[in-house]
Image 1 (cartoon, one colour):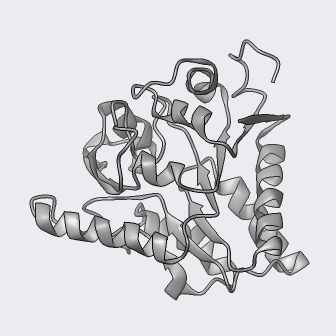
Image 2: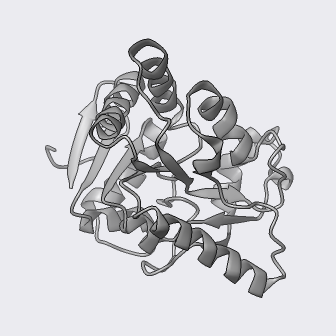
Length: 251
């Protein structure tokens, strides 16, 4: 595990974007695992700049998103489908046929249908040869994707119930009304994430500092799902100084 501390959010985002760009240049058919939320916005902005100004070519890439809210249509402004199009896909030359986002319109009561769909999503990743790189954020409670505290390290793509903390943190995207935040999501599992050949975890701001400390300096625990990255042979954490402010060791 490598920890790379950058001066601020902008520098963190640029560093991560250039790592992704080098991956695509080495392997134009790269399979990328993508994340949503506020943390990767700077990364996507810099990748768009590299596409527009330096000719970074996404046309042969395949992407798989980590997660999606359950109960939102793809057109809903807070769906991750909308997020990815607005903040990334609509601005680069990626082929929409090869950009996969979990289906947020599954019926949570149809357990067999959910099982079949989630197995399909896993199989699609494997058909592409697995993820070359998985981009991750980290929740204030240590979650990755929507794998909340207590999630099994052996978990695969499935539906998860969101914790009150996660829904409170995400209420800012829903007019600060937690009642509008979905209670369920479809997410890649921790084992799915760990199968990626490389992990790039991003964290920014003082509000993520304690989660970062627990993830990389604390014991590996299902109560801090992000702590599992300690076991990945190619995990890189790119964080800004504020997110690193609780670390005890000189990384």
